[in-house]
Image (cartoon, rainbow over all chains, first blue to last red; front, top):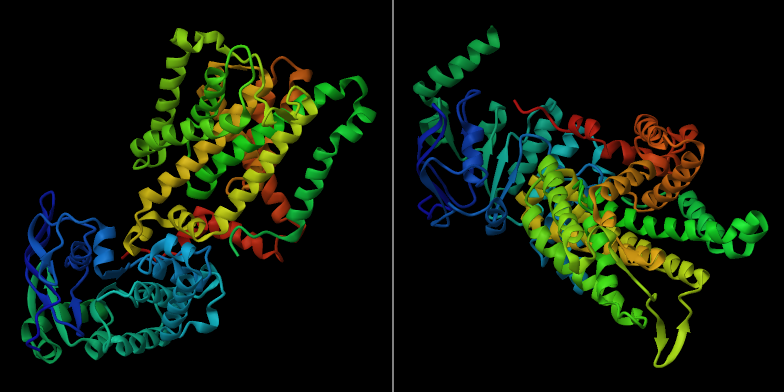
Length: 255
Length: 350
């Protein structure tokens, strides 16, 4: 684990008026690891992921991707650099088929619309790539189904497939299991686990079982600050984390 | 899948095309003395159908509501009027490319400035550009002020010195308009089903998501804006050819509003719907004008009823007739496209 981090943040801060949503956060993500960000509601996790994907500019500090700052770049440019993200909301194109959704995602990273127009071989490659990611996400049988007609769980999986189709080097997944049943959660957890040999993941997730099963390292946030960051076992044993997050979580559950 | 409709749509559109195209054969028998007048009306409907279809690319496909689309319609008319020689006909061979070029450049300039705006801001900026040009042409002596510019000769279509088509013949001109409408329709149908069309659908559904995938959405929207403007300018040129003049009213916001009503009536985002809308609007206008001088009230009521009863316009009625609503997959297409349902497919952010 002594590799150069693929993503690093230094003193990352984001204020909304008087509210400091993310406060002096510094953490790094190493190649091929799953780095989970945990924290109660309002801890600043979603703001953090928006800062990492460039959807929000930081008030202070910086985000380095492969050692280069991403500040000043548009969401599109950051996506083209290799940071793919899925949103907390199911963000698919409901009128297109499952395959078309993935093709749309793959095409822009494989020569764009013009590339597919100019060369049939390129258009075929795009389709192949889309089919490949559908297979990875076990959505092949649903390839020709309109996204709007798929179950909620399948739509969430499609969203991950679309991020994969863009061939990112880093995937930012914002609560990929949100709103899912137990069975679907296990399915998506299996899927994410199968990706670790090829991708680097930053995962924001509430489902503790999945997080502890998947994550190599965990950063715990409270009130916009990093409470503790380290290997999963260290976080699992941490008194501080248990008191502040798991304790509160437990209290909430029993209330 | 998307932009593919049940077979009956093609059947109905081809049947209507045949009825319109063969009008010179059956028209005189049905309308007698009035048949020439009806042919003129029919030609106008064909021209307006092309105009409405061009706006559909912007409003229905990309999701940008423009209230300044008449700018390009009028620009086409004025380009023809100002570029035509005074005492001889211009050649359509260079007039058509010239009109397209002028419209493309104008659309590019306007587009670069407005394409980053959305919703009400896009409506207002397009309206502002339209009104700016309206003011310019209606006050400038160069463009004939409020009187406009007369066109003494319709552009000719010749091969060398030999005239190919007699454009002064209303039948020939009618067929020229019809052919251009069909070409325009086939082009837009191809475009909306292409990879590029898929990107436009993506932008319509969720532009932010398209950007997050890596698409430079403004560029794609700008191209659509230019194509839309060029098609509108061709329609404007044909309108000027028919009337024999270019007039400020052709590029005023009133014209932009009218074409938007044709879209609403016909069904947005379907390409074929606006053609039906243009015909329906003009027929209604003709009937209402004969019924009462207060026809705008009747037209207003019709549009209100159309919005309430037929939210997807006449096209929606053909794609999914009320008695087939449960069986037709296309209905689901329409339903999925509606914002209310789209929001339910998204999980509430917690």
